[in-house]
Structure formats: structure tokens, C-alpha cells
Image 1: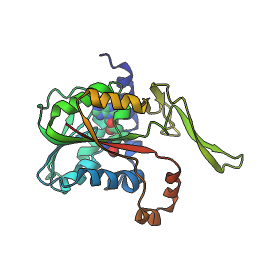
Image 2: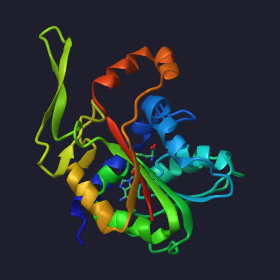
Image 3: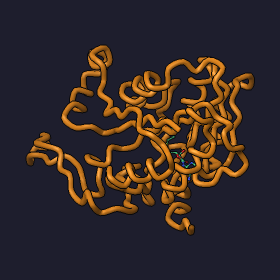
Image 4: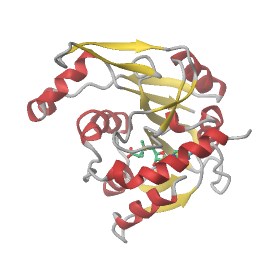
Length: 252
Ligand SMILES: C[S@@+](CC[C@H](N)C(=O)[O-])C[C@H]1O[C@@H](n2cnc3c(N)ncnc32)[C@H](O)[C@@H]1O
């Protein structure tokens, strides 16, 4: 299948790799630290001795966290710039092997070679997401898990955002064009042209792609910050008004 828009999407990642990851620390950016990582690690459980694929690893923070906890990791990304940053930020003795490739075609990896696959905020960047989900199924051992997070498609749509008073105060979150599936330009990075491209799909389409690939949905989480995190980062209380992310735990 031709992947013209997917190729354009990756060009944009290549352009903005440095800007996007400039604020990353050991736990990624603030949304990852406060909202996504606690959910992901709860779903992942123990990683000791596990062989894990980080599909769409970006600058590699999650691969490094997994390797530190005892896993051996293969980390794949389709942006050479992201992989360059990841390698620079990874200690030489970390058990991480970085590979260049697209999630919808990882032919250089053997079938049934991973205990667990994690893909953090990547699937909405893929034009050919159905094929990528099938590819993850091929790569997992029987009974293995595929855990992935995406922007919540019911709240983050091609036209969504805060409705505000004329003084800029938030009234409510607006959602529009939910059933318009396809590519759209994000508002990121704010001050640069050629913004990042994402692909919107309905929850129904995700569900179909997951079951057609042969997966069972074992858990589904709409992450919220914990009370501990909220006392550290009170501005995240706003996240209770909607859900920015959704995380799937799938079993082969
Ligand atoms: C939002 S970033 C997430 C990166 C990382 N997982 C994280 O949480 O920091 C999305 C990543 O997906 C990568 N990506 C986009 N399309 C891809 C594809 N077809 N195959 C592999 N990686 C892709 C981008 O280069 C980028 O690094």
C-alpha cells in the first residue's frame, strides 16, 4: 500500500525531532512523567529478563527506563534524527539495540521474537496503522502483550480545543469532526511552519484494526494524574475535564 502521507508525516518528525524532545528528561516530557508513564508501567508489570520492542522509540527515554528495569530492548524509529538523538542519550552499556524502520514493515525482525511490544504515542502518526498493528501481532510470542497509547480520538479530533471567554478563560472543551478520518495538521510546534501531521480515526476503527489483527483487548485505560502527581503539578487538575490519552493492553 502506498504511504505518501505517512512519508510526509515522517519528514515533519525529522524536521522537528530536536524541538519536540528539547524538554525531555529521564522520564520524557511532563505529560509522560505525570500521566502516561505511571499507567504504562502499571500495565507492563515486571520487565526482568523480558525481550521488548519499543515501536516508534523517538529519543528513547522509555527504552532506557525499560532497560534500567532489567529488560533487553529493540528500539525502532523511522526518523534518523530521532535515532541519532536516542543514541547520543543512551549509555553504551545499556541493553538497547536501535534500528531504523517503519512500524508497518519490520521485515528485519523475526516473527514471535518479543515478549512485549510497547508503542507510546506513535500509532496516530501512521498512515497505515492497520498494517502496523498486524506487524506487532506477527512479532509477538503467543500470549505476548502489545501495549500502546494514542491521543484519545474522542477528545482530540481534527477540530477540537478550548472554547474561551473573550478574556481567555476556559469555558469548555470543544470536539468537532469526529467522523472525519484521515490526516490533519497539529498546532505543534507552535511557532514553526510544516507542523506535525497526525491521522485521526474513530474508536470503532481502532477496535476493528485490533480485532482483525487477531488481538484480544485485555485492558483499556484513560489515564489520570494521581493525587501525588497533582500535589506536585497542580495545573494537571485540568486533565480531569477530558481525557487526552487512551492506552490499550492487547493480548496475542
Ligand atoms: C510522539 S513521538 C513518540 C516517541 C516516543 N515513543 C516517546 O514517547 O517519546 C512519535 C514517534 O513516532 C515516530 N514515527 C512516526 N512514524 C513512524 C513509523 N512509520 N515507524 C516508526 N516510527 C515512526 C516518530 O519519528 C517519532 O519519534
